[in-house]
Length: 282
Ligand SMILES: Cc1cc2nc3c(=O)[nH]c(=O)nc-3n(C[C@H](O)[C@H](O)[C@H](O)COP(=O)(O)OP(=O)(O)OC[C@H]3O[C@@H](n4cnc5c(N)ncnc54)[C@H](O)[C@@H]3O)c2cc1C
Image (tube, rainbow, N blue to C red; front, side, top):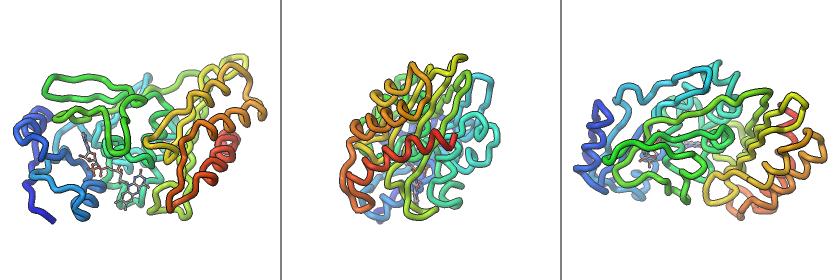
């Protein structure tokens, strides 16, 4: 492994200053569960790592009636251990609780999961269900980026050079809402998903679906929402026929492919199976 300098800034401004001074050879790092794998394999050979872990406030969970603000360095374990999140944002809780192993969750962060931009990122699929918004800070100031527009491709995000993710705003859905996330794997831990499926529906007073979200992982180059499936669910009652139609639409929308973890036909089939199963489970 090539040698690199390790910086531990104490503020966001200091981190941004270091990234600006060191340029493209410096890499921001949080829990390093992805970064370390890439350093070991030689895929990544930075001159410097800029750790965000010592920056106060970046690891916090801020809960309010309107929603949750996750510091970018909040760990999956912090989400897993939070009963407020389990009650109000259950799909996020399910997703974070299934990342890797408890050891990985103790250091791996939700922000790192998003910035790594893997198609298999569990937390990313769940956060798409809740219309999460990323707070980004950079040399030119701060901006909000809806998560739906954050992923540009495998390993590519809307972060410009020198920018960092500082937080993720997750609104709590209003009204009668159910949501779930299913991670399809061969074993129960230490496994990336063959497929990740998330569904959220909110019902109006008459029992019709007023808002629907369907999101998939490992079904395209990035974690994605399925607008066709969402449209098939919204605007009517949550009947078996409508759920099956939505699942069929999602299976058609998915850009699944063959990989050593699973074949495209199997992933497509399991989208049809898991969307109704998640809603029944809710
Ligand atoms: C054994 C093992 C099992 C795993 N299992 C799973 C799994 O089941 N599901 C899953 O989704 N993932 C899994 N992962 C991947 C990884 O643990 C997660 O993606 C984790 O959330 C990454 O967080 P981190 O803090 O460690 O990120 P890091 O490794 O620190 O960073 C990841 C990337 O994001 C960038 N980055 C991090 N934070 C910021 C920030 N605030 N602003 C800008 N850029 C930033 C880094 O530069 C890097 O490119 C696994 C990894 C390992 C090693």
